[in-house]
Length: 423
Image (cartoon, rainbow, N blue to C red; front, side):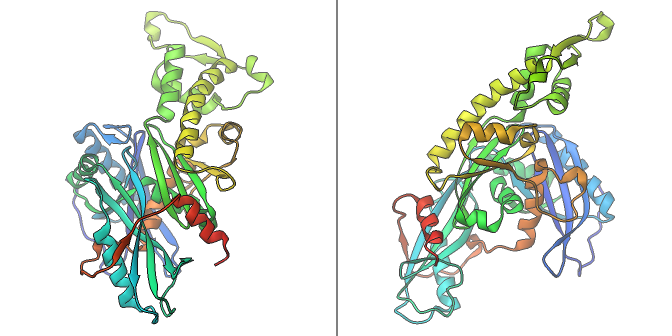
């Protein structure tokens, strides 16, 4: 057990812990007066005990968490007690709820906003799921949508859109238990799309409309942002591990060797030289058994990769269609996560999806080079979320009366029109 000492009371720290299917990583940072985060320490270990984002082996996951956090603590030269944990497993559900309050034409006061948010909290039906977020985003004054600061304005009716993210209870509880078993307190469990969106999307992108596709090792999260908030998401139980397994199976090699081939020689796009470039493949059988190294062309490797990518991109396209990401609105897609590091994947996705595609990296000054790629977008976003202190109406306690308003029509299109109307 670690010998822990609490940090000095005057020092405010935030610690992010991203528990994925391929890696567990931790980041300790100190918020500055200007809002920027000073990175104090990072840690990373190969994930053991997590499959498709779900905890499958409690003991091994707990040990990996301890190792990653202790590495970050050694680099930072201090011990931490509380962490913000990322949740990237499937089963996430995102909805937008709207609540309305009559205020009789007078100026909006803080107590009106508090009353509205309290009513919003009471009107949310999680349908047996565990709420991870209930974040107020946009206010509406007498039908005028997209108001960010309603205080002091006159209105007959004040309404608010609330972004709700919920998950199946059991996976969240298992993740929470693993972290607490590693002698760490859980400050909050944050949905991966919320964190990743904060780290790699600009405010304007989130307002005008953008799709974020997190290509993880075991899970691909497809989420749509509009009006400054996440308005829909879908989790696909597939990712970079599937490409690695396809390579291992096709060429009779170990997963570690297949991963190396994917990273060093793999690509989503083809070139005339692929038929001439040769790659040595170490077979599963050991050299003691007299098995010789096999040689394949790069074209053969890329063929296996593209076959899996074709299926994955097809599922992503279907998810975007289900989420209402289409027409003039659905023009920008951002890929992030470790899978987006595959060479040429943005060009490949752009051709398949018929939309502008870019690779999103964490926008966070001071990140070590080893943690500055798209594979660490969620980690950086967790730290930024922790430092932002966003209002979460789940903590609202008092009771007031306001009428919940049912959403009508396409939520995505409604939020987009609000921002394009030049409010």
